[in-house]
Length: 422
Image 1: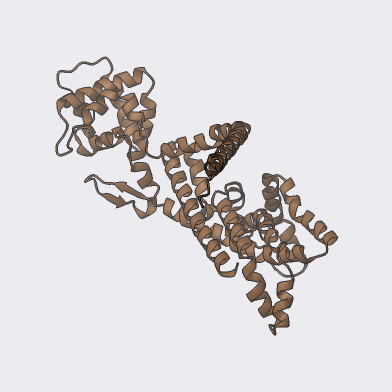
Image 2 (image 1 turned 30 degrees about the vertical axis):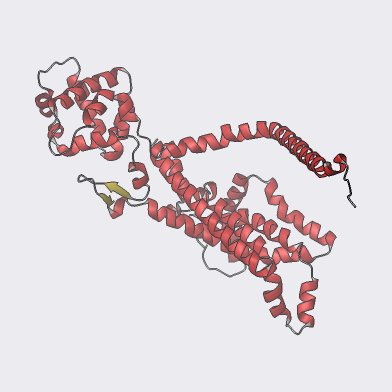
């Protein structure tokens, strides 16, 4: 017997598949519409972050490889030095370009910026340029390669012209090398700076050391406080949490200045210690590493407490009771059962405190001494006093690189702990 299947029944799977595809398409369109709506709502915030945060940082980092001063002030000289091979003194055309460029840069008030940039290579270049431009103005010469050395014999020195050529090259690695206490010598090789001029590598190591010390101290102080907050009754926990949060309501400068008053030789701390007979003379608690660690720990401690507490609050006490019921001693149960579950919070708190400490400025500047300068203070000196934005950008670039590296390390460590104990 032959069974006849209606055409409408045989087409039913195709209809269902088509309807399913239409529903999926409508769902995707609805999702895209919602995503666009959310993006439009967040667009003002994104633009604000781009204009006030991302763009300034990007511009500062770009300054670490830019060298615009001399090419902008003396384009004729920069073009003349491009093909100079540095094996002999430049051709007379380069001397003529120098003389003409000095006069033009002086007339356009751009000579000062070029001279300041050259002074970073050689402290005598500014005086040389100013002296030369005074002699060259209103003067004509058939051969400037003879006239300029007569004005100053340094124009017959190869090293003077090498400095000019290096300052005319953009982009340049000079700032990035200087931030690591290296430079390019007269032969073009990268060499270390003299020991008495090497300050930046030590500053980076000092910054990492201080940040790591503050992180460790904060961890040791915050862990028991966080445990107490997580295990106290709700009312008592709220009161204690209020004491942790109160410092956020106080200005950073005010808190640091308060420690300035407390730690001075005749301050509250030394007076209390002397009154109790614990010390015979005031302790030196300021303008050294001790003051920096005390001030930064006080400021960073709430960040560590909140990070660890947020994880501890979600850990059930059942795990500890179960471990003890299986024969583990209380300390063993705490170390092997409770602590591994808090490592995610510990990692987050350590990373937050460490990264914030890397860029700290006010506290080390007020409470630290000459040997406690952190890299942020040197960046401030370059931008506010030396006006060397290129070196400031190079130091900032390395600071961003270090921050990214430590983020990767902390992220990997926290990820491994979660896989092992989660």
